[in-house]
Image 1: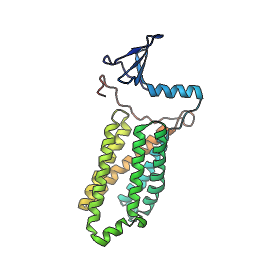
Image 2: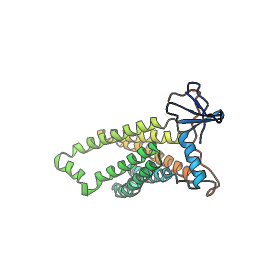
Image 3: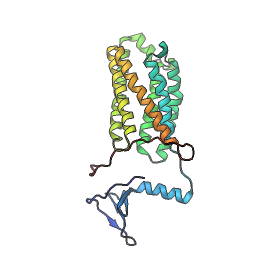
Amino acid sequence: MSSTSLNSKDQSIRSEHNEKVQAVGQDGDYIILGNNKYLKEDIAKVLATAYTGWRPANAAALGLVSFGITAFVLTLYLAGAKDITAPNAAVGAAVFYGGLVEILVGAWCFFLGDTLFFTVFISLGAFWLSFAAIYLPAFGIIEAYALNDPTQLGSAIGFYMIAWGLVCTVVALATMKLNLMLFLFFVFLVLLFYLLAAAYFTGSSKCVTAGASFGFIASIISLYMGLSLAISKQNCYVSLPLVEFPKPKFTLI
């Protein structure tokens, strides 16, 4: 649980019993203990753990690992590793490990009150499922374009990639105060989607290779973050830091 320096503009409500305990913020979202400021929800989690002895698992670890493995398979396919041209293996991973698992992780994050990761994992799970649907014959997407105008397929998928690039751009901005690894993860995803969009619009194999390279880096970062959240002093001798951003001396939000 991180602490921040006091903000003189905060409107505080002093406790009658202890002058060092204050509730501050527009809606009393922060609690000041001594000279440190904490989120009220963080204190509630600590107190709940102390009284009940039960602590929920960090579902984000599973979501990050599932994304990392699925993206690892897909980007190798896009890069043309071992001259593989059929995306079937990537589609299978996208449906079950990338899509289904991340939808479940997003649902768990919802009940844990984690709005950001709820949004992220539900969105990423939906991406994997919708991506797989393009290549699954049961949905008839590729066949529909083949019957009408095959040249429209590239442009349609290009717009699809741009849309997901915009989603990742917005989420990247929402993670700027968390940690460097998470921010870089979404930056590389933005590059992946925009380069793939360019590739589908122009047919450039260089854009596909470049996008796959950035996606591969994003998959490694995702696996790193997932393992960082999963390991602890009880199950591992080492730790994987996520590199916290330096705390600013002023607060914009």
